[in-house]
Image (cartoon, rainbow, N blue to C red; front, side, top):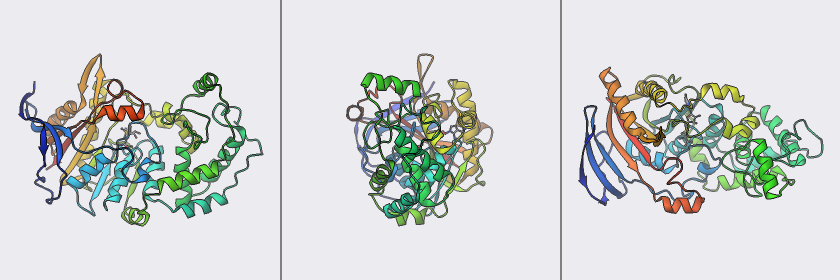
Length: 419
Ligand SMILES: C[S@@+](CC[C@H](N)C(=O)[O-])C[C@H]1O[C@@H](n2cnc3c(N)ncnc32)[C@H](O)[C@@H]1O
């Protein structure tokens, strides 16, 4: 049982720079509580507060191109990259998802190494970190044969989502992209991915859910309930508009320069293809116990990218079992220790989950894993744990969801130090 001593109440506080980083300006923080947790496993500082402010879409516009299951906001990697790394350093994310850490690292003049077992992740992260101009997007789009008049296979099957003319264009785009490899083609692919389904006329589909691709049967039911049928939505103008919107923050040359030495790997986090001691900092968020179904929720995206669902299903770790999750994380943390440089830092973001009607704080599980590994000679120590709380009422209102009862309420961040 952890023995905690509450040492501070709600107040404003500036954190001191860390021992192994250069002094730097850190914004004043809203710290609610700070405790020293002392248990038979470890002694560490646990701070609860609002470490960064998540406003809607305040960071670089490229961060928001594509939605992705269980992704974190760019403010999170920004906070840790500025705290624990220097320009020119290598920042790694072994569960990179849509490449939030990678893009933020490049924006802050660091090199990004990203890896994820789902090939879809790299199809988002790489073009984000190699953006092309709107003019290049327009030129490339002009080369793509988009023929809305000639029938194609599968248009019946996809009819709950797309008007046949839209689907024919989409098929033309998909075929072209499968046979073309240029930065502009990959960028268009990423933008098109974000337009596959959603609720406004900016998407290719009839009204649908933007965050997840619902099964065909469910879309049929949505259409019946809403008395709607897909209308023709020409795809070129929609891709161009979304591309312009995602590029509006500029800084393309800076991102491209910083990403020259980036690495992108499709790999299991338990056996990364990066060399020993290559990363200065890891900022990552592993899959939490069945919080998201990366296959079911992305079936349209996987179809569009020509990725075999079964291949992803075999590779991605999605488990309900805390025991299996612990085994998985033990192996992934050992791999993080291998790729981190001495004195490097790893930040692992987790949440709380309900297991058999009990709430389990996954940061405590990670602390236990790290302590166990420490006894076996793994050179990682728990440096501190940060519990980031947000103003959920504000967010819940703007997204029209109740974050306090569904999903993960807090960011729980375990900061590890490599000896
Ligand atoms: C919580 S998400 C990460 C989201 C990311 N931080 C972002 O902002 O987009 C977890 C990621 O872990 C990946 N994943 C699941 N099992 C994996 C494994 N065995 N090895 C590597 N990645 C895995 C999933 O594909 C998913 O992209």
